[in-house]
Image 1 (cartoon, rainbow, N blue to C red):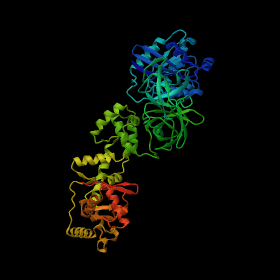
Image 2 (image 1 turned 90 degrees about the vertical axis):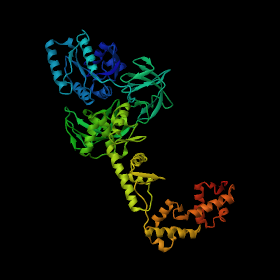
Image 3 (image 1 turned 90 degrees about the horizontal axis):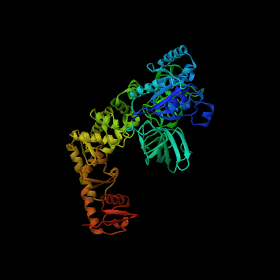
Image 4 (image 1 turned 60 degrees about the vertical axis):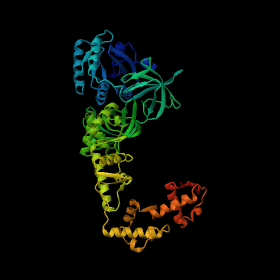
Length: 634
């Protein structure tokens, strides 16, 4: 069963609702005011199966200029459209605006019903059909069938049905393997059922008992019941009109409202800044100017935004350019989404935008490389889109949970594409994906950091991994750095020992002067025993040397000295003898104050405390409050 969304469009009183009723048997005017006034004010819905393997969810939108916002809410997500143009009036202002909106939203499948054909003669019908053909062809609908119809006589209804079936064959199927997303268009309460939210399921599938989330409010709930066109079901699929009964501590008609979106994961972040390719429609006299305040429509939501043009100062009718929308309220948006752009005041449709970057970093301008990457995101193949997306992310990478949102690809397609790009030098950590260029750049930075360290500290075995992470500064908790170091270790470019990274051919070779210095230091520390001074108080003959500290750290790494505090080193053999005495003489004793160690460690309190802390670290003592327990010796 193919499930698609069929929408209506057209000027007020051109017979959209009557046409839908003739085709489906359902009167989509559900509000008392709509029935009394004879016009559609809000969205109406019906189910329609013109063939056994095809099911339409029909969205009937209002045609009155005062309800264009509702029309946009219904039109977003349509797969194909049935446009009503009355034969007695022809194309009218809202007809044109609806066509502009449909073109902005990327709708390409259109069937035109020339309604009320029974009210005019054939010669007039030929004239309005020709005129309608010309106007729709000015947009992207040049091959759309135009059929004179009458709900009174039944003229053309079979043809309309056949054209819809034919158009549906070439319409891409909405996938239930995609992310769950359902813009909410109504919220109400039913006694015995509770709070109910309705909408069109754009992607994925939902089932009874499942946890869902409402964005951007971040309210969570559980599905207690599902209906598809009045029929209770256990599961609903993409392309269906769905009523969701929701339970939860924060769920009510006050907390849920039109414009929110049902998703199945709180990990789907909302955006305050999006990068878009924005276009002014041909029929507008408006300019889109840098800093202009605009109305942005997506699904059932409307958000105000300031536009920041990135490659021009203004966009004239028919032109396009790159821009960022600084949203005044967060919006749940995905790459590839099409936005309707309307002026702030007076309110009219002036353009559209395609989303190329969500949760975007602030940009004031873009260079040609960034523009090419953004263009690829909106026009490329799956693999090209992913490569461009991680290229734009740079050192931030893209988390795997964000990939379907930041590429517009389904989760399964993302997994398949990632597997292919890994062979091209892309890197995949536990949480993120990084581009080949970023991986190559980070690898070079790691090599530079290690080489620089060897040059500055020739007596050190290597640089600590933590220091490399800080130097490379990839914002992922060090995962990419660790991955690349592991790869270089396997390729025998680097070696890693005790958390120290060095070039594989790096060795510490002391010259005769350094050998003399090492011997002198060790002899001196042997003489000091535990009564060691801080490094700054060592004899002037040592403190005057630039290589004193590197030599001390080298002797520490070699195991000859132990650093018990920042400026306090003790000969390893001396501290080991001390630890052995503590175990032998005090092993098993509790509540020992620092003064109880003075006989074995005859130093001032200033030096005693660091030595006791070192014993804690080595597991010889256990600190309990201000006192210590000495473990039992063997």
